[in-house]
Length: 251
Length: 251
Figure 1 (cartoon, each protein chain N blue to C red):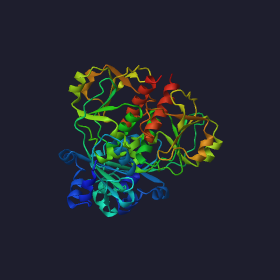
Figure 2 (figure 1 turned 60 degrees about the vertical axis):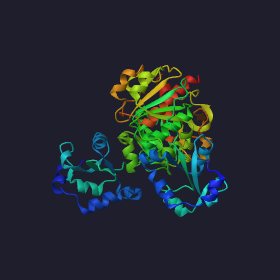
Figure 3 (figure 1 turned 180 degrees about the vertical axis):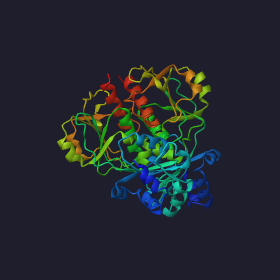
Figure 4 (figure 1 turned 90 degrees about the horizontal axis):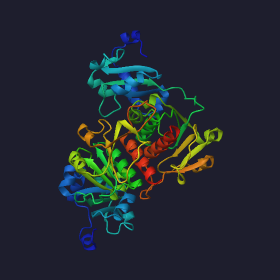
């Protein structure tokens, strides 16, 4: 957290702040600085309740009661640093946590093989949070979870879920939980009995689960339907898996 | 469909075509002309298999084998008429169907009270199509389903689903199917026994189901969860309702 002494010295937004914050739109810069941006009153409040380390908060004068250690900025200056089309009163610079370890070996893990759309990943993180699944592993070619669009669409769930990026063939080869894979052919999800804990493996919308991961699947599972459309949105199919897993677990 | 005689006469894209097609980005113009735009090889193929009336197709030279009656356009001209950031080889002008009647009185209807996000509506249409729900009614303040972003995210399902916009209090007052409403408080969706046919009523993400619609609900239903996050994405919660309805129906 920003300590009071620092705030006293640095009361203004500097040109170098502006440049640095704007550069964080790029993944390479986020990794270089080890920082990402969170915007909006509600989500920054959730951030403050989390274990994430906040480096700085910039807020409009009107919000300083809520964000006491924030650096006060004008609307114009907030417009200069925002990653949104409509800036939302407060912006926080947050440290990217060190490579998350899977510290809950006995809990269910959602594994996503190739999610490209930031909104989809955000929705998936929020859905996992809803159903109490606390760990997500994405393939290395997936969209970065510290992308502003992902952050916004998680609505704060990003601060409660342990997300890591891994080489999935190596990870799955070592995993010792039963692996349920979402495929177009498999047992109906409504007939499948999910073990808990388990690994739920979802493929990308355009390519499904990669060929090289298929041999690791113990239970091929499919979502039956009326047969009209070829695929479901990835956020939707993941939600149906999480919901059905939760339904069975909570029986 | 475009008939051959017309194509012979009008082989080029005119300035007035360009102006008219661009104006269809606006709902008011879509309603004025009674037309909307569909773009992309795959979705235009699905369009051609549907009952929708196509007024014109514009396609790159390379695609004329597939779209025999299309007007040939250059990449530059396609760039002038596209509603997408990356034009996709073919663009069709399609007639908006006359106000859809609910012509399947004995089938389940999905009713959405206030969906604003085009991607969410597109996802909902696609999910309904997957689970064989053929009728969607949206409140009048919902996003227009002929918006390009909605069309794109339905991936063709828009041509198979009967969508209408109605004043929901009047509609629900006259409806004689059991109404299941998605609320934060209610019976768990996993305990609820869904009748078939029925009405599944979903509220907007930010405001839920409007106060004035609450008295029409026969069965308040909720999606239980771990209690961490306040809400689910509307596309996700609708999908979980459709999936659970389908699971029970197909038992």
